[in-house]
Length: 233
Image (tube, rainbow, N blue to C red; front, side, top):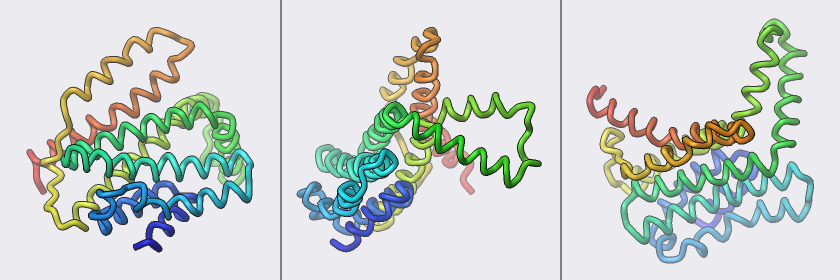
């Protein structure tokens, strides 16, 4: 399975979403070796991202490499280490999701200028090619709001990839998985309570908004799980 780990790292360098799903499948396929020595099992994953960094040191490449290394590879490592220590899959999922939230926040801080530049370029292309879809009256407001939540948007998408990977992980190791039975520790909600005072500081309110969106992803998943249990298809 060494080739699959290598391929996962290559894919993660260009699409962290798909890369995270693939590395979770890899962890399941090589679960025995991965639990015993996660760092050894995941070594091949980091080869392609680090080679990219050696070939190109531009800011955009640095972000791509960090997305792969910290936003995918490290998350898989955290998942395996947590699973080895407590042997509870849902807690390994939760700790991994928290790791993604922390990286998403750091990513938004470190690459804020690059993210805003990419967003502006994308919006200009949309405005040029499909001007009828752009409402000039609300453009300034929507631009400001989207720029504000860029860090959390990336984080939420990665948590979604983690959930998909988690489901495929269950399927690969042949342990029955019922979405309705998914449970997270109630103490997690204290993190949401802890950040509420940030709302009262105008200078860091954007941090509060992104943190709240990211943290509320877990209760949202829990809510979907409960509704699936109460109203099964």
